[in-house]
Length: 183
Image 1 (cartoon, rainbow, N blue to C red):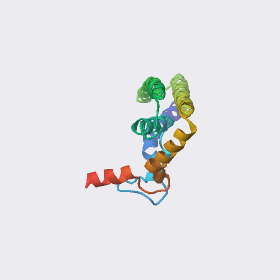
Image 2 (tube, helix red, strand yellow; image 1 turned 60 degrees about the vertical axis):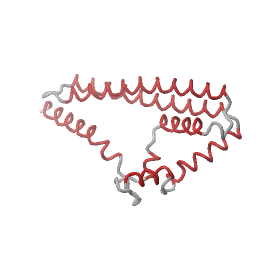
Image 3 (cartoon, one colour; image 1 turned 90 degrees about the vertical axis):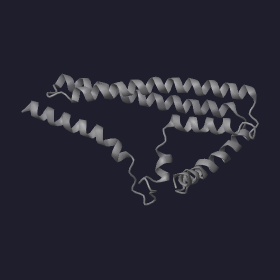
Image 4 (cartoon, rainbow, N blue to C red; image 1 turned 180 degrees about the horizontal axis):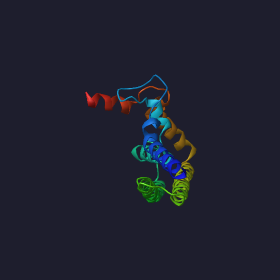
């Protein structure tokens, strides 16, 4: 009886892990585009490292306009590569844990020891995700310290022009261009 409960639990856990991403992209708002996902959801679902890389891209792209100095460029570039290395390493470890979990769950029989291993791997996987988010937030804070108040004010304006309309459920200039390219 315990084996059947364990197998049913493992099957449920496997299905939950597999189907969670499918439901995570759904939105209850009625602002969906052609792909079934609204622009507000895309912005809200950005991971912290994505936000950092978008900000860094925006700053580099507009370096002349915001009068970014050579030292600032070098420091930002160094910060960007440091976070990218860290993100790649953590993402690969996260992927390995997910694969190991799937491997155990694919067995015909999952024991209590296997369940304990899975729970330990889940804890480690989410600890990595938590650390990845903390690293990205620290990089965003460092990025803000690298620029002057006037430069940051202009970056915020550029961010609002590029991404702010996504928060309000409107299409940004980039979304409009992408939509026109698809036609």
